[in-house]
Image (cartoon, rainbow, N blue to C red; front, side, top):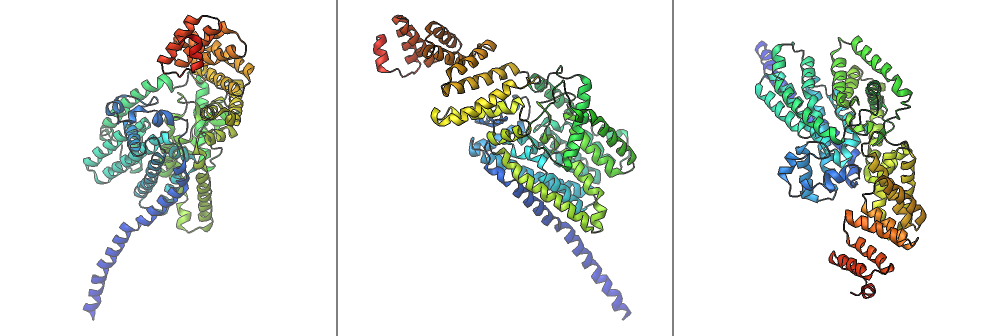
Length: 583
């Protein structure tokens, strides 16, 4: 009997351990499928979205590098002041699949985001000691946070989801290196880091995050810890120099727009806003303009108080490794977009929270882990209600990116006096209107006139280096819209203003010449405009228009010469007019 009782535990124990081991390896899969499914459903409306005129035309529609593709150009030429060849290669793959049809670009963005959400789960699962609930909620917050819609539903932001993919893979390999001490893991980590940099330069901060993982792992600070990261910092420095050189040409805001002290306030404001909107993502907009220099607004001035409070709390909880790790993860990943050196035309951009919010999500779920462990129903209910609200807002937010009209109309709802969104929507409506029969495009031209008027009357956007050109484009579109609506006097006023600012646009010279010819019967001035247009760009219709001026002024020789020039350039000249000039 004694022997039998001894044998039973010996036989049963290994079987029990084996079952537990198998369950721990396979039980993660349902969680991954759950977060992948929820994320995919929340973003599913984006699969019907079109491109927008917010950089998509430069990254995709008009990007000649995608045709072929041009491999030499992909690795040697920047796109929209950024060097990210891996991103361009991914877009070239989409072009090979669907040309300029947007569905494959949107599908790739969605798939990459779902993969990133799964990677967030796995990353947090590893560094949290395999806490499934913490990993699940962190990944879900990342996956369906409304502030992340911009990074996913905007076709041109492929660089965001792509660099994050390699960024997370690099961090996971580094964690494996810390666990196993195998140098191969460190080299794979470096490889993923380079791929991340080649997808978006924002990855340059990864070496600092590696130090954070050292801290999280409770690694003792040593010279070897620094030496192993030297290759990371060297390649990071190289990409920093490349990025600054490229973006200083067009993307960086004029340093004279705001004094340095104002930029320090902006940095505090950015930290405050990104923190608040992690919890309450409102207002959501593709464009958040800088405040006017003469009136920064009280939120900007009180922002330092928030930052001081955040620093005090961090210091107070300095012995709490979770607090220090997650807050620093958040701050390091937004350090490049604090607007001390301003990039772009917005003070905050929702896409910049894509990676940083991993830190805040881990902080929130980690601190409340004890409530989940105790099965606190109130905490669980609040968490799921918050996520349900996020899912609903996210689902609807993806539809804002349906096209340029829906996108900019949403921005204008929040910032009705901002000039840039008015101008972008006007451009989209104008391009659409001129492809239609004028009588059927009346309402579109009226909307163009409204948007251009608001943009013209708004305070000039001192942050734009091309504000002169932008200003003339508003007068050009409004004047042309007046022309098609047969409001010729208003059209002439806008063309006069535009030509006074910039006399190098041949189409506007031609339009003004037409009005001078048809409505004012001032043939000499009309001929001067047509001549100026021809000197800038010798188009067939300009020659034909000038020919009519010569004919009315009874100079048949020159009228005949211009008709011949127009015909040589492919113009179809009515037979009766050819007979009039003797051709």
